[in-house]
Length: 240
Image 1: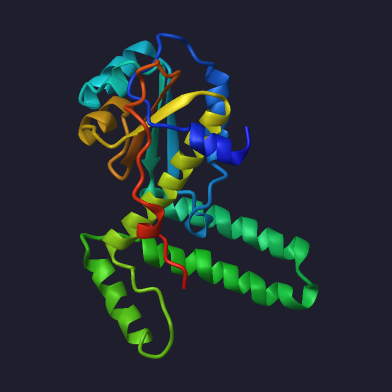
Image 2 (image 1 turned 60 degrees about the vertical axis):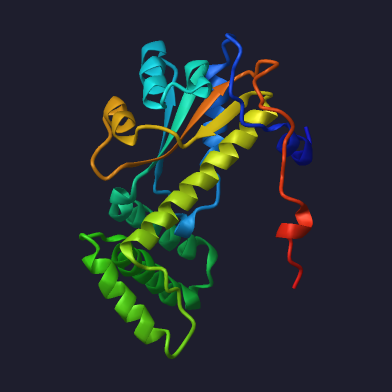
C-alpha cells in the first residue's frame, strides 16, 4: 500500500476475529516503531509484546474488559522510562562523540565533542532529573531569567519533561500502528486501563509509566464503529 492507503486503512478496531496473527511480523512492526522521532534521541521507552494467552486475559481485565482487549490476539504495551535518562544519555554521548570523530573535520572535532559531552553529560541529566517537583521549579526560575535575553524553551518543569517523554513514546506507538496497517493487521490504542494493574502484571519498576496499550488482531466485519468522522478541515487548518 501507499502511505496514503495505509493511513486510510488504519482504524481503531473494537472487535477482532478469533484468528492468529504472525508474532514475528508484529515484532518487526515494533522494530520499525523504534525508528520514530523522539526528543533528543533519548529513546526513553520500552515495548512489551504480549503473546501469552494468560497474560492477555489479565491485561484485558486491566483494560476494563473492553472488546478491543478481550478479543485481541496480541497486545503491545508502550512504556515510558524516564528513570533511565542517565543510561540513555551516556549511550547517546558515546554515539555522538564517535560520529564527530568519523564525520567531522579534524579542526572541528574537539569543539563538537565538547558540545555533545555538555549536552548529554550535563544538560540532559539536568532536564530529566526529578525530585518531588522541586528541581523542576528551579529549572523554571533559571529559564525565565535566561529568557529575558534570548529565546529559550520554557517547558522544563518536572511535569513538562514527563509530557515530553510521553509524546515521544506516542510517536513510536503511531509508527507501530501504521506499520501494522501495512501488514493488513489491525490495532486499537487504548487509554482506558488500570495503570497500577498493568504495571503489576508486567512487573515494571517504580519509575516506569504506561503510555498506552495497543491491542492487535484482524478486524471483524463489525469491528469498526461506523464511518470515520473528522472535524471539517477548514475548522482546523490555518495557513499563515
